[in-house]
Amino acid sequence: MIKSKLKPSAEILEQARQAASPVPPLTKSIFTSERELSLTEAYGIQQAGIALRREKGDSIVGYKMGLTSKAKMEQMGLHTPIYGVLLKSMQVEAAKGYPLTGKIHPKIEPEVAFITSRPLRGKVSESEARAACSHFLPALEILDSRYKDFKYFSLPDVVADNSSSCDFVLGHPVPLTDKIDVSGVHVTLEEDGKPVHEALSSAALGNPLLSLCELVSLLDQQEARELPAGSLVLTGALTAAIQLRSGQKIRGVFRGLGEISLQIS
Ligand code: OOG
Ligand code: MG
Image 1 (spheres, rainbow, N blue to C red):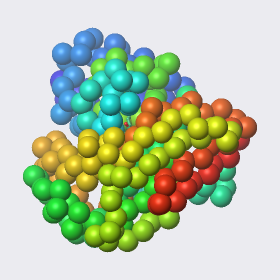
Image 2 (image 1 turned 180 degrees about the vertical axis):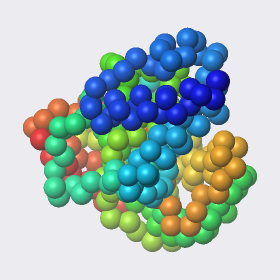
Image 3 (image 1 turned 135 degrees about the vertical axis):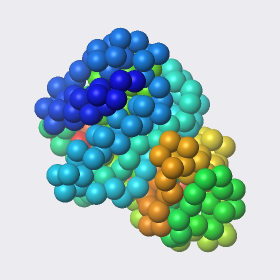
Image 4 (image 1 turned 120 degrees about the horizontal axis):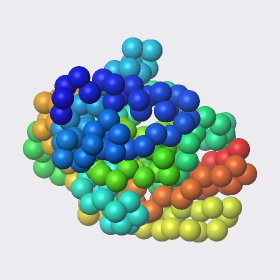
């Protein structure tokens, strides 16, 4: 990539987000083909976009993994796990409800998450990852793509757009004791009282801890960075996402772990 295109690309996407006005994929606009934008360069655009938001006072609270389940890979037609950054301003409280104003074409999906208590770096095993987590919790991720029709055509496009991150809602964290089977949580996503999708938490790369390991490895590869202690990590949607519309009542039921209800307005 021509380095001079990095910041302008981040600015195009940040402006689209702020104006809630979608743009064509970068690989069909500022870049003329997918070959012109590598995944590493796309992570560079993602970081430049996060820097723009941090300059305005936001801060990083963690990361989200994406495309970790078969259901999501098939829904999006992309088959490689990716990550995005979670900012403080993205956390919304379920009790306040969720207005769709300022969003482009938001979707919601159920995930399980971890909170780390020790830094992690490079290649880590599942047991090392587990030992570095203090808490396990349910989450709903709200996605929004800054691209027209929620179509990005290529993996670098979605990575550059912070992997479609928009907002997230957390349930109550439980301490991650030996008794907790992080892969065996049955999850149902309900819309207006009707179940629409269900899965086990093992849908995330076989075990959500392996999704955490993958994040740690990708952060090291792409940014030579560790995952700091105190990070929130969303391990990727367990089911396909559903489109949000106002008036909808969304509920994620995480058997044995808790539930999250969200009124959309
Ligand atoms: C990409 C982000 C995927 C997940 O949990 O799989 C994601 C997208 O669907 O636009 O967040
Ligand atoms: Mg997600």
